[in-house]
Length: 114
Length: 113
Image (tube, rainbow over all chains, first blue to last red; front, side, top):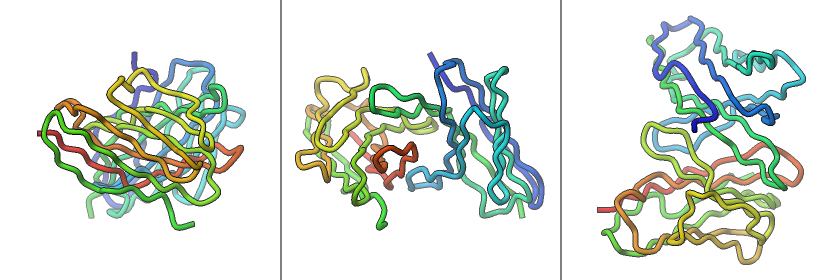
């Protein structure tokens, strides 16, 4: 059973536009929600993360919006640039013993056109 | 921090062969995770080490898989009797004590022919 659903699967945005990627989760025990960026042939790199005690977190051009009651969170990339073209993964986790296993969404391939 | 490193970056093997991958975490990161990523999907958790102790294992980790972290520093992941379904990117991540941020390595891409 997929615990984190991500949409859309692919997204094409013009340079300067806003990219929005959405995720929904089922497990109410999740308490940490990071977003990762992955370029071809590379490992995922952490972009930004949020905890459910806040509804929004902004770092530069990247903003996470979090809706605890709806069990949804989204990534907004403002002023999207061609260099932002990559695959983006949302993830969620809870502490299981001492381990914090990340459960990832299926990814969104973002293409920013010049 | 020099980052998480993994070796080899690519491995091609024939079905039935054994393969071993190595992960060197960021120094002073006592937490180490292994994930598997298939094409078009997000990474899936395999196993977790805190120092040298393997504390969590996913149901994805069949008996053919074994992981070690003998001195609490680098880790190895071995797959015995490889199958075509094992073809994937194997990712290692590490984290500092008492933090949630996991830093991923570049991965080892395994192709089983």
